[in-house]
Image: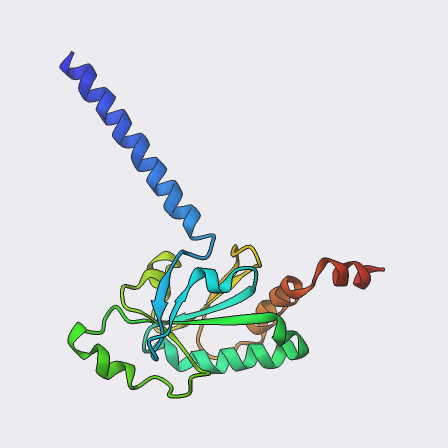
Length: 182
């Protein structure tokens, strides 16, 4: 009886563990639920980005060196389609000690148009397996599904072209796609 009870509990435990693993893997394919503040203490949530083609740009301190050049290259390459996408810049702040957080925020851009979400717990970095010392770019469709993910440093024309091609497909409305094939 004791052995059967132990076996039953073991099966329940293993089944529960498989469910948890499956649900965490599934979360990587969608935009996570979040509530984060930027350097100006404005709060943003995942709901602020509903029904939008989204370009998440994640990095740690060393990877942030590449964020602006990639963001500008993407915008420049998209041309008039750039109005159809929205950027979600996220700084991985896990390694910043709590007692210098206020000081560190002062190193971020002062222009309110250039806001960056400060992810003190590394929620994005953990979920999307951020590559350190790189600009991590994740493209989401209007349903908040991950369509493409890459980690980049210096501008690479092939990678840039791949990103832009994905974005052009995502920004086309069904009407525009239909007329393009006629």
